[in-house]
Image 1: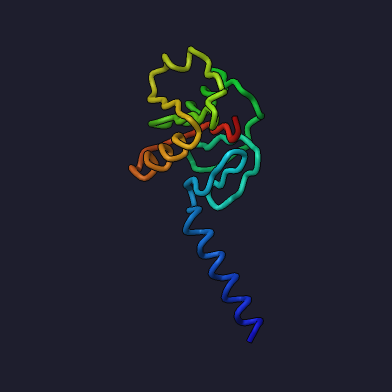
Image 2: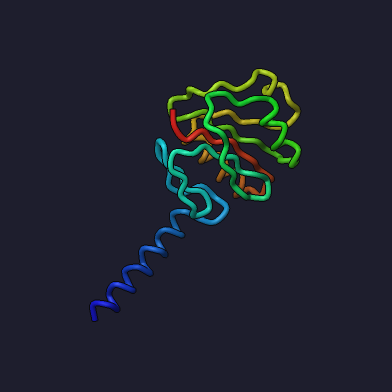
Length: 132
C-alpha cells in the first residue's frame, strides 16, 4: 500500500512539474534559477535558439553585437534579451539599431515575453541573464 502511494505521489509531482514547466517554454524562474523546457538551470545564463534548444552562455554583464548576431543568423522574428532581475546587464548600443525586432527587458518580464511571443507562433530567440 505504501509503495503504491509513493508511486502515485511521484507521478503527481512529475505531472505538476511538466504543467508548470512546459516543453519549449520557460516555467518556474527566480533570481539565479530558471527552468526552460522542463530543464532546471541553476545560476547559468541561457541562450534559447530559434529551434527551441537551450545553450548555456558565458556569465557576463554585457551582451555583445557578435553574440546577438549569432542568434540573428537563425532568422528569428523576435529576439528577447533579459538583462537581469536588477537590470545590471548592458547591451551593446549597436544592437538597438538592428533591423529585427529586439525586446530588452528585466529578466522576469523577458521570460514572460518570450513565452507570449512563442505562443503567437513567431520564431523567437532569447538571451537570458539569470541573476542581477
